[in-house]
Length: 356
Image 1: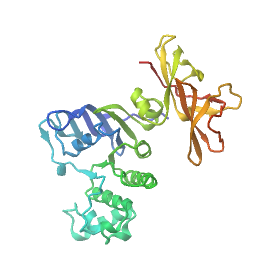
Image 2: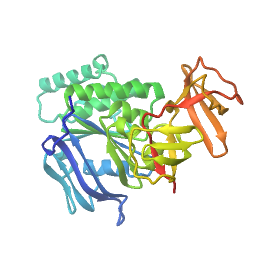
Image 3: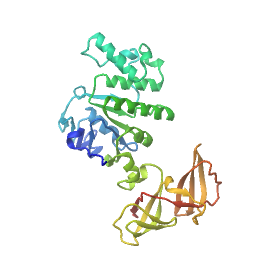
Image 4: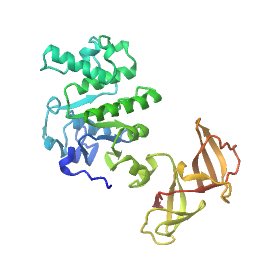
């Protein structure tokens, strides 16, 4: 069954032609995207690309120069008019947790609940603490909790006022890699259980792909591609997205036809038709999972680098000065530096760009 595309009526958040920044200049320029109800979106990119600036504009901390931000079809930011942060029904989870050290965990979670009576407030706080698996630590103080536990408290506090949207500003960056992975999946499950939409800011691709439904890849204040993770990896919109997302590198090639390229790795057939004239010089993206071991292959590049990672080993191969590529093999296939290994290309998704 074909998946139904989101329509404007499904959109919770709409960002239209947004430009904003600090002082007179614009860090973010002409950014547009839309997030559906219940989806988790991500602003992904290198440091300084503008992702935190966009988040500040969404939260209402930063006025915008041009464009519009709409939440549930209501305009919350226009040039010269910014709805106050506390009136937006947007929750925020910060990188440094921002918990009140003198309040208990329960008091921290219930801090934003101003209109409930004492019994209702306590019940809601305990329900949220149970949701984040911290109900037994309600009377503890933040310094008595681990970093991961503090981050879950920060999430529960942001969820307490029942926001329409949650903003997550690099929330796992202070945690070790394994805890980051587990906590990002936990947070996704919690948000999906409650049906709450979110925007995550991160520079970690694995985190973005594991947690989010839609991802925006940013560069120099502009969105290069807003898409599902699968398409960002297999159908990148341009050379920057292809280079930034996932592992891999470019090798030189020459177009033989719209879906066929000749290279030092042999003739590569792809799944798409490019509008190149035969003979056009191109660069072909080769990812580690495009290379397979084949004992019968005549292509035998030399191992110049290897990185053991337990269940797999990442190899760097060299055919010539102009042609190097990486391959990821299960660790039982153990080759030594300098060895010539028979391989072949199995690039079901052909990604190539005309050589500049």
